[in-house]
Length: 361
Ligand SMILES: Cc1cc2nc3c(=O)[nH]c(=O)nc-3n(C[C@H](O)[C@H](O)[C@H](O)COP(=O)(O)O)c2cc1C
Image (tube, rainbow, N blue to C red):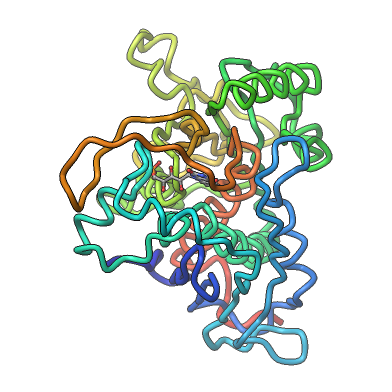
């Protein structure tokens, strides 16, 4: 099992959906960083389901700091953070224990762990574990703030409805929109398609864009620890992410070099590129332009419609009707998670490059 990420600023994920808790251990965080529970809680609350498209799991998600802070500052010791699982109803999962949900990790987890895995609510494969990713992201964002790096994320597409491009100031305000979309008109349409899918006992996916601003030139360790490679790895740790692209992404395959290349120029005495088709990364190294990454989120696997499956125990065909509590679209809830995983990865690279000291004074 590989539950840790990073080389200097590292995170280790633990917990299950219906177990006692879900949490994160952060090791390698510098001493002296001011931090309190409210700072972390504010970030975790951004992941809360909105009443419009909500799961009925009324989880409070009250975070607790277990270790690594003293007198309102990090101490340099491992930081333990968690939320207790309280609003848990495992009864439906017990009934369908041997009927793997199509699209979920029930089947692969059962086969890999010989049925010993905690299957309730998806166990380790639940979106619930991402609450802890956001806790780590809250601390990572504070670290990045010290060197003026800002990470933003927003919904750019849901159910085929695409948001119009918006400026960074509008993207900074997305928490005020239940869909975390900076284009309010598109957000209205997105809501309609989510409601429609929900009404049909179905689900839909979408695309989240993450942007990192003021990243200096030089972050990234080619050839195996490239910045894009490690960002992609961190984003693929988010359940339901099925694609990650940087800059123009897959559409580069249909461009000419003359269209795709970002010409260099000098602006205010600094080397910049005129366009940012590369998404801020060349050769696995940040080039000083905004890092632009997009993650494709699949439709929620647990849908209300009857689905075909098999009984893993009896090896017979079966029909599955899921009674659990699931969002018809998880995209808005995954937005702060994308932001957090980008911040965690960038903090690790910034520390590797010596940009953040071991003691903050
Ligand atoms: C924030 C968040 C919430 C999620 N909630 C649900 C859910 O309510 N029901 C569900 O079936 N899947 C949910 N998922 C997705 C599954 O956990 C995921 O699809 C599953 O583990 C299989 O992994 P894969 O899609 O990466 O292959 C959620 C994912 C995230 C990021």
